[in-house]
Amino acid sequence: MTATPFEKGLYETGNGIFAYLQPDGGWGWSNAGLITDGGQSLLVDTLFDASLTREMLGTMADAAGVGADDIGVIVNTHANGDHCHGNGLCKHAEVIASDASAREMAELSAGDLAAIMDQAKAMGPAGQYLVDIFGSFNFRDVAEKHPTQTFTGQHSVTVGNKRVDLIEVGPAHTAGDVLVHVPEDRTVFTGDILFVEGTPIMWAGPVANWIAACDIIIDLKPDTIVPGHGPITDEAGVRRVQDYLHYIDIEARKRYDADLSVRDAAHDIKLGDFSSWGDSERIAVNVSTLYREYSGDTAPPNVVQLFGLMAELR
Image 1 (cartoon, one colour):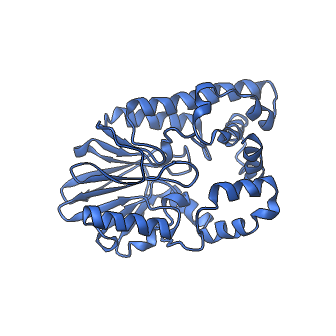
Image 2: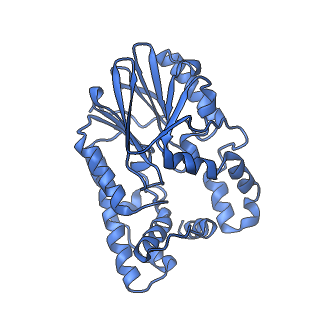
């Protein structure tokens, strides 16, 4: 794999495949991808608001000759808004996602996020944390478009003469995570199964599914791996994410068995080498999800409380 700088912009990784990168890869600063062949194109994910997505599409038009109206298919790797809030700018595109992702998209709209941000200042430390991490995005300037086609398991599409395989690996990060694999070009777009140099956040779990998803990426033997957040990576980057997941599972289990609370466990776990990764306070969500997995608790988490704990840890 040729090293690609982690700088904002569009990078051709080879043979009509492009990665669009957004440093610093933290909350909301996601990556996207473009697959082209024979005059056809597929976009892997859009961005957190319409302004960012318009900028990306303009860059793609200038550098790759593919404008918004030329994109025939969008694949959303999962339901988080930083991967789908610009879908509607590609007016002619079919939007494909997993069934589970489509259900999650319907549960939390950009309008809901805008309303939450309007109330953030009254939410104490949790609200200030939301302003800190999401204040750069405009949730009133979005272009939502829900999936027009969904699938479970695996699904393949063609872009010109290229086969593109969509592999559902969720629930893991979210309920419906999908990998986008281009076998001919030995390329995988991972969505948020991979955060590189940033801390993974496990909203859904179980942790074993996420670890298995990393194994699937490795088994595909790709030359180029484009994560949902962070710089383009390789097998070693995938294994580091696995190492983190194994580590927090072991450490959270010890504290669960010792009857520590989620808060106390999140404070107590020493992250060692992983502490240099961005957004390390996401350990709060990861411990909460693991505790609920250990206990068999299927109730949704108290998200406001978790954002408050992340603010405290930060």
